[in-house]
Image 1: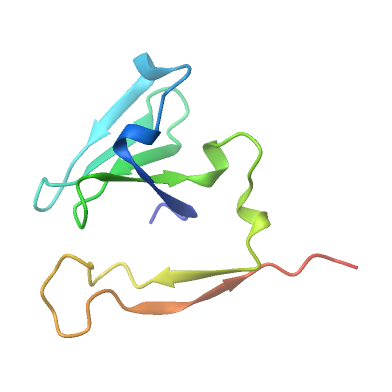
Image 2: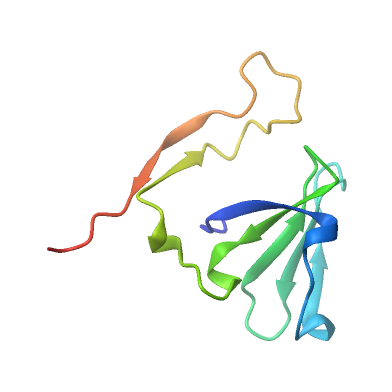
Length: 103
């Protein structure tokens, strides 16, 4: 459970500006997705998607100028059913993560 807010980006639209030498690849299950973590601190950076191999899912906490707290609501997948699996329902939403700043 990585607990990251991920946004989508086309493979061609992402440039690693620094630290590419510290990226560590992790694969599991079908071995189709490629998950990248920082070898120094362990944070999840991005992954090449299994559901769409032409896209990355990018951890917004790793992007300059954006924060997970910029989103009022974030749907949370259950982590069991993957969109690329051919189940009747596809990925299931386990709930909604809400950020309500103090007034």
